[in-house]
Image 1 (cartoon, rainbow, N blue to C red):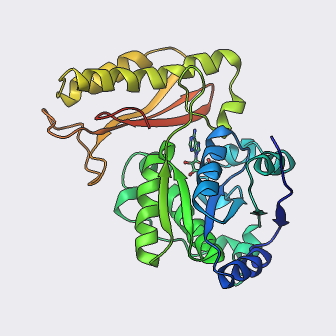
Image 2: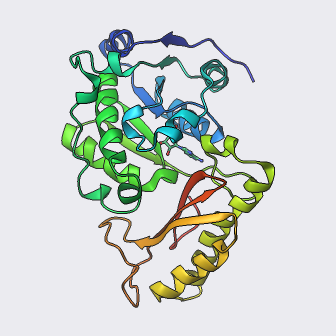
Length: 294
Ligand code: AMP
């Protein structure tokens, strides 16, 4: 595939200046925030942004504010040069990065960055198992949106709860427009993730059970199973393997975000959400049981 060099900025201030020129020239802007270690899932968001906009920009920043576990932050894979090469193959125009110092230049003591309250959608699941995670996500994403200005911003369904937190942030800010894109998967159904690099080939095979669990629940729903505890049980059964450490298996209303696991008989199709660790690598995935995978 042909690739064109993209413009690189290593501070949000430089990126903002460049983006202001694009706004001034009335160019439509598509923005994809990432933490790097890019894969085809990220690239699918960039390709969608490329179709919809005149200018596409991507941020790469492993945000320390959203890691509640320092070991997870240390282990998080990073390869900026390779990321840029991949982005150039899909027509990205600009990539920017930064540091906590440059994202929050007004804060002198970085341990005192005021964190955003992530709101009701942060309750439970990721919010419960990764305390403070969404506070950190919302704080950096707000700063990223302020840097890019009005645009279309692209996020993956894979991080379903995150999309709810981000949509409510965009509503508070009055911009940008949030576009949620389908989950890209490996051949065995495993949701692509930067963390998959940390799995052995055997662990990747086992991790396919997460997708199998969601597939079973969806098939059961589509065959008329409405009993929440039965649907959960089916998923837990599929995940029952010595190498799989389940954190949660949950059914939620995808809009209202109420837990539906307690309801005996469900009326509306729920979102099924799973978090599990394999070999110490934490993986998440989800599916709407009412339709095909997205
Ligand atoms: P991350 O770099 O993990 O913060 O992800 C950046 C964006 O890519 C987020 O909006 C993710 O939801 C999205 N993303 C991550 N994995 C996938 C995937 N397998 N398919 C589609 N989008 C994804």
